[in-house]
Image 1 (cartoon, rainbow, N blue to C red):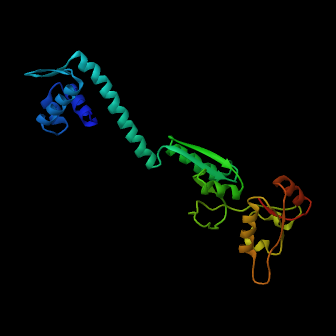
Image 2 (tube, rainbow, N blue to C red):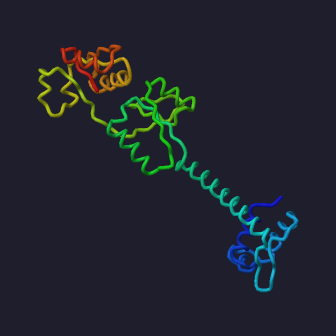
Image 3 (cartoon, rainbow, N blue to C red):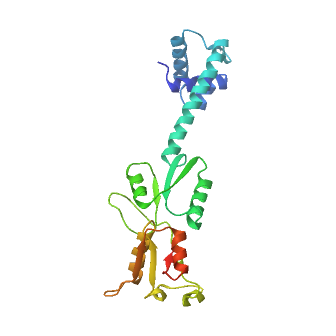
Length: 243
């Protein structure tokens, strides 16, 4: 069986036009290179080089064999480079799950920057609810799931990517609409309307953590409605909602 290193020795000899020069270029003994090239010729049953005092030149069969040997070595090196790049995360595929719109600033910017840094990685986005995202991570369909909140999940590793402001919608006549920026204490005592769908449950946990105190928890109404219906209800005075 002809080894890959023997093909490299043959290519080096052909490119150098001399066994001695080829041996020096790849830092091995000339006798070692000559022996391996001769072994190739014996296995093939044909001469690949015309050996002369001033060097070695390829025979017609040698030129034909060289082209194939060069292709094999090149493809093997490309395969190794691909494996190394894949293991380093520089090429391949990345399945990202989320329930925030791709148009959202930080999420979109993060994926865009990743694409610029790693153009060989194909990024696929999947918008699902929280339960589906977690199931996708557990069964290997997703590589990463981006969700709001700081909750940890058994068997899964998580870390914070970024922090974002929370936007509050309220009726046009509400006193807080005159404020350019609303702070958490400003919302104490307000009635909140949230969707039961994602990210409503996580938003509820945030509100409870920010506004809840012993003996006094924020009033939160959870309904199975979509964003547009929720905003319409708020416009009619039905509560405040995080978007």
